Image 1: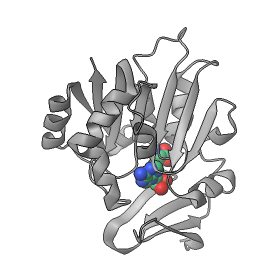
Image 2 (image 1 turned 90 degrees about the vertical axis):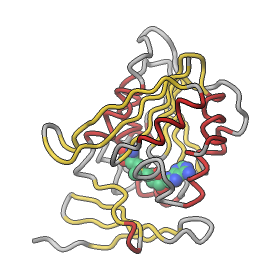
Image 3 (image 1 turned 60 degrees about the vertical axis):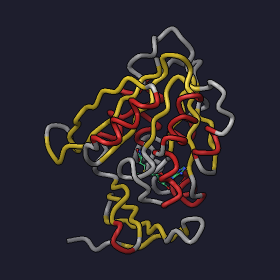
Image 4 (image 1 turned 180 degrees about the vertical axis):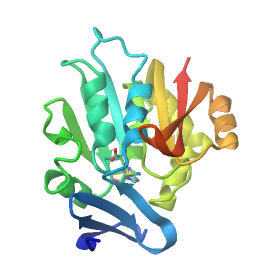
Length: 225
Ligand SMILES: C[S@@+](CC[C@H](N)C(=O)[O-])C[C@H]1O[C@@H](n2cnc3c(N)ncnc32)[C@H](O)[C@@H]1O
């Protein structure tokens, strides 16, 4: 068994703890210290890609789109979003932790095919919430995978994103018929109810962690009508 090699540590803002970045052979892992567990593993990305595929399925290929991805992680969702839209579209990716961006420019780059180097990628280093503050319709799809579901795991500040006020901001930031897609490790009935209360039409899909196997993850698909 190849041992894990610790590569780097990053601070989560506002005393939120630490992210530990490790490598074992060609496998990478980002863990949150303490009992919060693994945030992302480079070998498990089927549902992360499905988040983009499903969240962008309504976008017609001849239309130029603007997609927002939060956060970067290992770049799988970003790469799949770039694949889902045409050559004149662009994808903004928001990443809270600057070191995660550095890891993607370095050892993680090859995992998802270096999506940060795509000229259609725009990088926002900071909290994805900052991009909802204008409440101006800006995006055709917002693809969120910043926690392991609609609860602040990376950071308790993320709870605001999933609150009624946070979801209203996201609703306003989407174009008409735009889609909010959220990755979750498990279903959450009360969250579905909250999304509907804001005015979204909600559908959920179960996607396996690896093609044809592994635990089932939930993708919330919330459409602005
Ligand atoms: C589970 S990983 C994302 C995995 C990603 N979908 C992929 O394909 O690799 C979560 C990422 O979101 C970032 N993040 C957490 N909270 C954030 C926030 N409020 N704004 C922007 N990025 C955030 C984390 O630092 C981490 O890089």
